[in-house]
Image 1 (cartoon, rainbow, N blue to C red):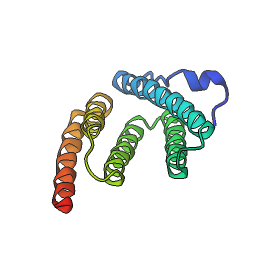
Image 2: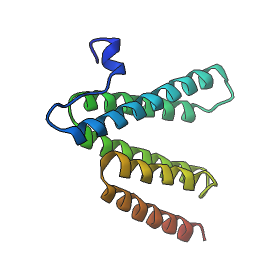
Image 3: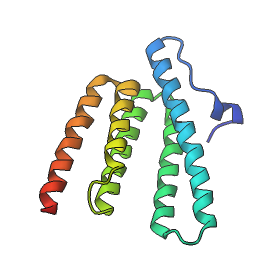
Image 4: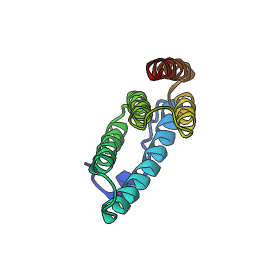
Length: 146
């Protein structure tokens, strides 16, 4: 996927666009941190046999999405990568709350992190979008549960 280890560790640099370079730097380090956490969790989950296969498969899927996002980021698609990664993260947070029978105490933290990342990485208007979508999904989940 990348030519060397240095390609994995250095964020992309765009001489013509300072804002794009900063967004790429933030997204690159975020994706690297998420990748390290996912790989460590995968190793931990595979060592413990008590975890369900669904958990391991979802972690493997999210790891693959993170690797593809890093690859797309290094090919110059900074904002597209950020938007798609945030959408996937939001869908996973929604799925997490649905599969665990409702809105848990960690749900607001997940959504808050996604909204912050949208404002930092992409554009502030995406923070508004994710906030409205989160309120709408919570309303639908509460309506369905009653």
